[in-house]
Amino acid sequence: MNKIWFILTLIGVIVAILTGKPEIINEVILEDSQKAVTFAISLTGIMCFWLGLMNIAQKSGLIYSLANVMKPITKRLFPEVPENHPAMSAIMMNMVANMFGAGNSATALGIKAMEDLQTINRDKRRATNAMCMFLVINMSSIQLIPLTVLKIRADAGSIDPTEIIATSILATTVSTIVGIIVCKLLEGRR
Image 1 (cartoon, rainbow, N blue to C red):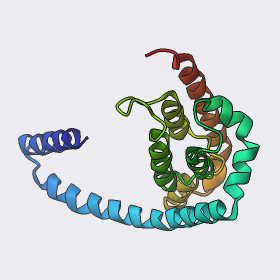
Image 2: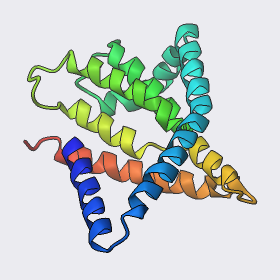
Image 3: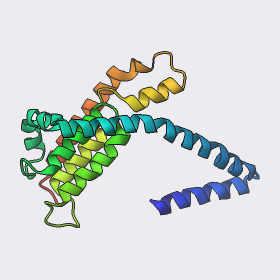
Image 4: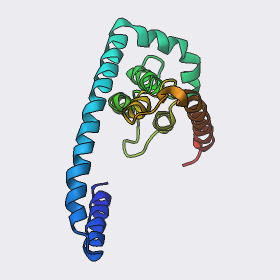
């Protein structure tokens, strides 16, 4: 990934020099890096809130209760993961964080889930079916409340930032269902 970013940056610098507009390089570096830092700081509040909420939910047993409710679904999605394995708890926390639009916060939970799934992986150099399924669900994730997008829309001055909720639910539900179906169809293949 570092190589790709380096090549893209290098191409941008070369194009700016060849077109006679090297001042654009400084402008982009100064303005866009400032915007990136401001954006990252503005998301910190949402991330802290959701990570804290997920920790409270885990320690209070709410995640365990939710995992029990979703057990029939998760058993079919992740048949090779033992029932009370820590990976299931991490997967559930990641799914809940994603459902409530805390995708950035869900990243840490997703990494934890993958680490836990790796402990039951016999071939450490190859992803298991459960790892692939989790990745698909994590990437498509049904969004009930897309908080990050709502915040971006509100910051951009949208009159009604919440008008996208219904379409977000529909789009993410369809993408998740399609992802699960494709993943299940490809599970038997190497």
